[in-house]
Image (cartoon, rainbow, N blue to C red; front, side):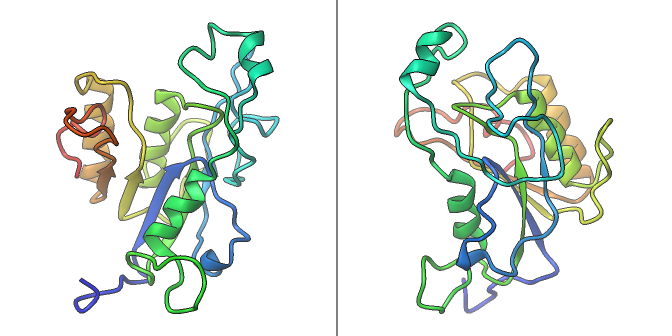
Length: 207
């Protein structure tokens, strides 16, 4: 594939994930714009972990979860396990566009592309409404209460998924709107062998 192309700086890939550690040396000069779409719901434990709701800072503050947090509200954290921070968004950003041939870290799939970090996942999970709003924003579609994205992405990457269920109308609508803007949506099929892809990987219009 690299004999054909190593990507182009004219292509922006939006990474909808946990945010990014922008100081990572393999991402130097790679990042453009970005936004934090993780809501901070009143009356609920803060999955945002950054002390606020949506804002223009897509930095990853960490997504660790402690046993004491789970024990304080087991119903809210049902299905979650105590863990250290994954820094998942930084890893995915590196897989997509890490500097290559520099003797450090990994090789990016298309190391000449630019990466737009869009934070949609906090502690343990993310809200579907936040992810769908972020998809639209990344493609250049106006989202109420959020400044318009001046650098619409050509590719929107979601290395995430839900429990097995059919693609619901809200997901189909979000994907259709993004596709209509000329953006490609790439979604993780899942990590469990032999299991059918779940939403949103099973939605029409995604890769």
